[in-house]
Amino acid sequence: MAPLYAYLDGKYVEEDEARISVFDHGLLYGDGVFEGIRAYNGRVFRLKEHIERLWNSAQAILLNIPTSQEEMCEVVLELLRRNEMSDAYIRVVVTRGIGDLGLDPRKCPRPTVFVLANSMEMYARHLYEKGLQVITVSTRRNSPQALNPAIKSLNYLNNILGKIEANRAGAAEGIMLTQDGFVAEATGDNVFIICDGTLMTPPIHLGILPGITRAAVIKLAHERGLEVQEAPFTLHEMYSADECFLTGTGAEVVPVVELDGRTIRDGRPGPITQALMEDFATLVQTEGTEIRGGYEVSEVRTQSG
Image (tube, rainbow, N blue to C red; front, side, top):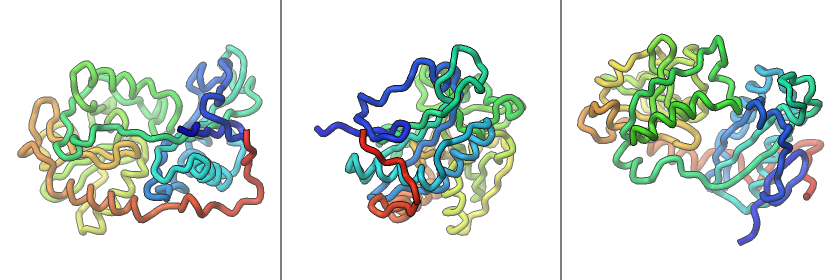
């Protein structure tokens, strides 16, 4: 099998040669940002939106990414071309860079940038047909006043603690609440419920990640003529919902059929959930930036390692 390539600080190198310093503040302190992106059928889904969100996260933590957005898009495409991938999960990471053992980001003169591409399956395929059994975890979602979850940072310990709880309980996923007890999101996905034909999802101002897949599903729901409400709701609304599902780049659209031992309606993926799953599957196969196309940029760092 041919070796896979990674992009690291201006070069494409074999994955086992893609190494960063132990003094990198992304490793030492989780000081950095990232994006997870998917490619389907020779196209990268919502590439521009993902890279824009990466820049927004970097702006929030005063991290200057040393390329343009167009250059970063081309790096993603070129990496897929070099790896001969038409379907992939892509991880774009920008850290504060190499510094000393102190916290001060001023000691990091240049960010580290790397991009990886591989396959990923967040949930077993049969769960998309049968649905997930999930629980509410005791770990509360970070407060936006402390570390805003809208920043897709390398510090994911809040999510990981929630995932550990779900794992120990034997659940497929954990639902995290805000400090005030409203439903926020799952440990790695956005949450949707359907009540009396209305699609509901927590609003961004609660401090959730503005998901790219979330936005796509909301648009698909509107196209189906569904009423969509971005409004706070509690576990009570989830327990009594007609349907429930999660969305995310890795998860795509996955149904939930049980929460905290309470069966959601008849315990099977509902018709609206299934329709939106089909719509999303069609969308990602037909929409996106063509890998063989590319971006027109004046200077792209594409040196071989």
